Image (cartoon, rainbow, N blue to C red):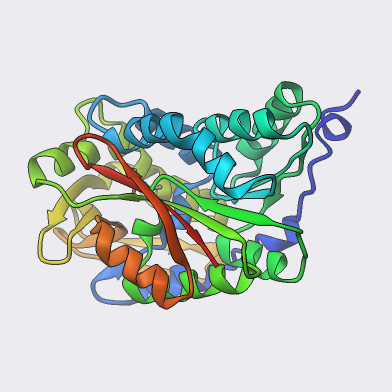
Length: 324
Ligand code: AVI
């Protein structure tokens, strides 16, 4: 049996239309900026999986610990529903939820959504073997594309979940628009489960994004390799260094690539030539750290009422289950 028929993955390649307009805009602005979605080519997704295992990177294991404890309760509260995961990656933490739903129903529908087709394919293949009675169909799409698609499809009861504090990678105005769109995608009575990284001292945050093994540095630099491959570019990775700092005023980690030497970069496919000065930086990601009560208010403003929240004993990470 071919892999494709075995996993019956619904691939919407046409959805991934990365035409590079955002790269042109980001590299032409001062200070320079690149969208974090360009982290996630195949290598970038692999590096992110490695980040999740790092001793300094606490969010993944802290959220997993919370999910392990509360998954059964979540399934009890929501009952059987269509499970839609945005940014599913390897779906590792999702196993706690799928196990919990398996206890309450033989049949369940799970739709993992990710921009990285390679990782999504292998994840769906593994999950189909582990949960043979579940209907599992992956969707390769950005969050926005996926939500537009979901808006036009009906489910009897749906729970969208967005874990790992990926919401933290959105600028505040984009976060607002995203939550609004989530709300539109849900019918009255549907659920939204959100995992958010909470504010904590800089001494814990900065090492989590400047790990001692250099995996986060490789992840950050890989964005340039990805752009070279995608847009026929000539970024010299050796001319850039990684740094992440915690901006206390805005409660956000900021990841930068610092240019070490004055030079030009060409991106042939985009017909783009960019000048870099020594000491100049590209902002590649923000990772906002949230306040639980504030987030509940924001959700509430979008008609998403908190049903229950869970945190770990140190209050480092929060899970909010809300209902429309
Ligand atoms: C995907 N996202 C929630 C991660 C974060 O922590 O903001 C991405 C990441 N960047 C560096 N390390 C992890």
